[in-house]
Length: 324
Image (tube, rainbow, N blue to C red; front, side, top):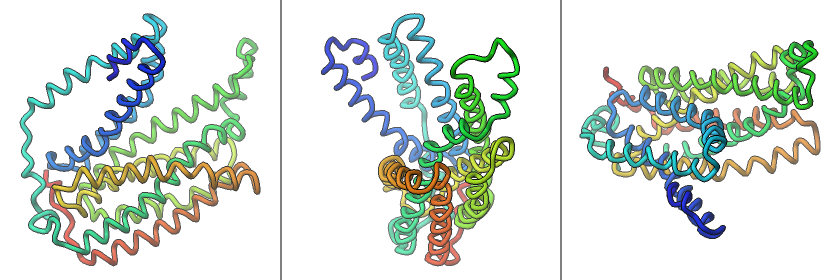
């Protein structure tokens, strides 16, 4: 569909090509993560690595697309980026995968029969919705929050006469927030290791517990302290993703694994995107930083919900998929 976008001759053809390209791209998360959860023994670590490369792709996409567009024109961006997936698809198709690896531990003999796991997944969906609210919300708030309140890089750059240009303040904030997110990607690797080492339910609970005090700090701190707090907060927020995805795998039967990830991403990419409305309300009625306190309350509720998951599943055996 990306290659067809290159050959589009009208606005309608261009729109249809983009629509179908977006549809197929959106299939990656449930299918790709489902594949990892079924076919990789050290599931948590693999999910963390998957997240790292996904984040690198997102971070590098504007740069790569900009270079191609500058050298060849915007249409060639779709052509150049459309060719590699053809070869990658063939390579993946020719790769032998052993789906029996995950049929051990928590998955062994209980798939589709343990009603506590079904209930736990339903409750987990509430946690994922709340986590999605916090994640989507901070991506909307932090860049502008940095521009208003983190000035140390701008002050340093503006001390040079030749750098006193319009937009320098925005550029300095963009560099810092990009650095925060790039460092945060390390959290994917840490979270993957955690997912392979401890009870996933407690890991999920304690990551949000650790995250909780940083939300008021994001609201009230300024400049270097705000930058430092943001680094740790994003590290935890991104680091919980492999744990969350591993929990889904533990609570759902293999035959419904990709569908369960589809449900997760409908919640986190779809429903959670409505966070823009309470953000606007709180910023209008209170202050630009007030939504961080809303996220604090959402995280508190999320932790209570995670406690319900632990209670529902009792002494559930942690999956042994992660045996080295």
